[in-house]
Length: 392
Image (tube, rainbow, N blue to C red):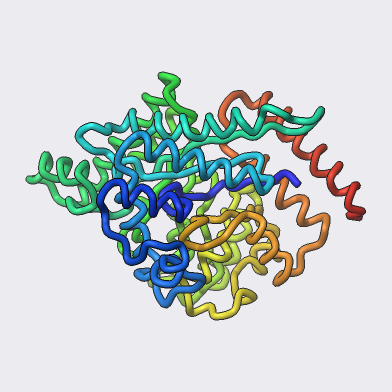
């Protein structure tokens, strides 16, 4: 069955064997030197807090410091995704976390693109007649919050702007990233298809990055925003109204009236309802990451308390994503299985959700080519469904 993964972080989706091998080659320390040991100590099935969830990124990020390592990691992520039937993947990363003296932005992006392109070429070698090709795009992420300790690049950038307010430096960093992304895309250096902001949501509104999103908007770079993951509906509202978001990453707290903090919002129920209806009407797709959301928000306790049920009830466009294949110990198939096992999703609705992943992708190239590609994915889905006796 053709599938998509529109929200997957490169630094959260390494193979454990690769992490161990690269760490050993680079002389780095790990809490354990076996896959079983790392699963037990760092990359768990469940976490007690967001801080515990994020612990693993310091390990994965440490090995992503040169072109060879990043190319390999990107190649393996695409290969693992394609192996489970994912036909289209959008890999996101924060390049400014990986830039070093001898590993500049252009080299980081070229390495990612090269790895994804290598996997794409291999998997497209033996397609059946009518079978949709394996494709990819890259989304660059700025950080909602950052400081000089985040990476060598951030250290240099903050030093360069040492007389500026930290919030101003963060704003400038995101603007610098989107300018670099557009320039490298236009030069044909990589299939960069979108811009995103990630990181600490509470206290760091998307509106702080409005100038960067305006630049992306003016230069026809698609826009997604991590929003509603750790903060309420206002965060999603800001992403849409201030940042021109085409898609929303997570959107978990969209329907949580208790997470609304703005005192000017008197009728919280109406606010949430109006916002949900607007998102549904505008077909702003929500990138739902079930496993990740349950791991980083223990308060939900049961998967059936996830807001997916309300999203479906309100007719929102959703697509199921992994977020971090390693850190969340998941796959696209696992996310689809989790949704089907715990929510009322008919065969017809399930097909719509899967196909909408293709329709709402930021696919590289012309719209005409995208329509042709989506049609091939629909036809292939229906062929597979018929072979398995699925009735709508």
